[in-house]
Length: 163
Image 1 (cartoon, one colour):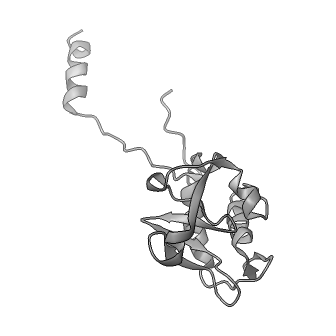
Image 2 (cartoon, rainbow, N blue to C red; image 1 turned 90 degrees about the vertical axis):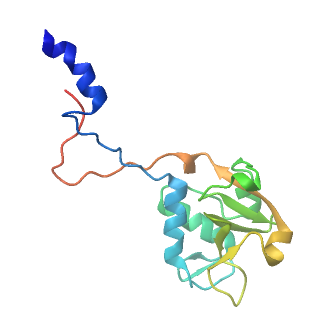
């Protein structure tokens, strides 16, 4: 009986208890932002949808497609796919639009990645500088991009659920 009465205080004090920190799973949007960096330097190709050459909406379509999310190959159609967060509330993976004729993928810290135009390559720019700051039209947060990715356990690992 005394053991049972002492258990709550032992738990509260941390004695004999090993705390496990949960592994934070990235969202699909965060994974898209990270994945997009693999294609830095890919050439711009009008109507391109592969690493051999991308146009702007082909780039965002390709990146999200690799994560199982289908996007249309049109900036105007991509604009209609989710809610429109305020600029100060952007999250990695949000689609960012410039004049609705150009789209990129928000990376965080005021930066985005995109396939700019003929003669250029996939590159990173800042939202708050130059022509992109002046032509920023808004953003789209895809519903599917806010889901958490499943964290893969090592082969043979057992679930940590209490039995």
